[in-house]
Image (cartoon, rainbow, N blue to C red; front, side, top):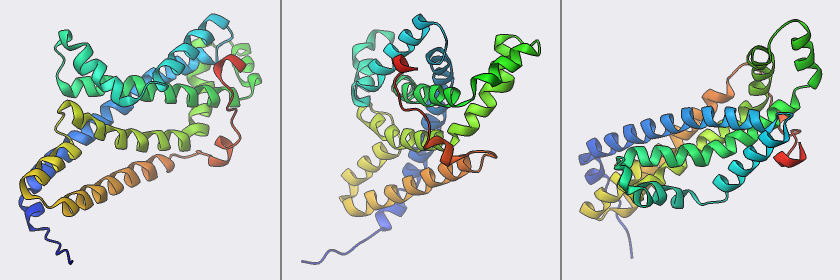
Length: 229
């Protein structure tokens, strides 16, 4: 039995693929930005001196990352249907809260990797606590964890494909629609696999080019939980 590849139907539906790609990029970009914001806030709480903040951050991380992303999607789309959120924003919320937990743990580890004396020295110069974080601690911590954040960004892009189950017309959803019309299963999924590969590689390499990122430092970061910090 021989299979004859025919990419002509895929090319004929290139507009759908492009629309799906743009939706995937928008969904991933929003999810990543919001996950970074959530992750920095929760990660900072996890590295704080106060035990209550660390416990709250630990609870958030454990709850969010131990529930499958698909369940997060259904909670927002079905469980919270009374909010009448568009499917796109349901997917953004799910990606934000889920990925934000992983970002938080990465940020916490990066902050703990910065010598404590750096923060004390910043305070001794007259900086406030927030200024010390913004001007001294965060810049060093973010450089340290850049490779880990690049990995999380690539994972988020791939995770965005789960938004197809709640009718978000992203790349995987459009690919499924094209496959249903043309029955060119191999051609459709080979095409979107190559697109995902190119997109994830581009994002990962772009983040890895950030000056000062040090993968060898990340490999030595603490992998303890919040409660052990």
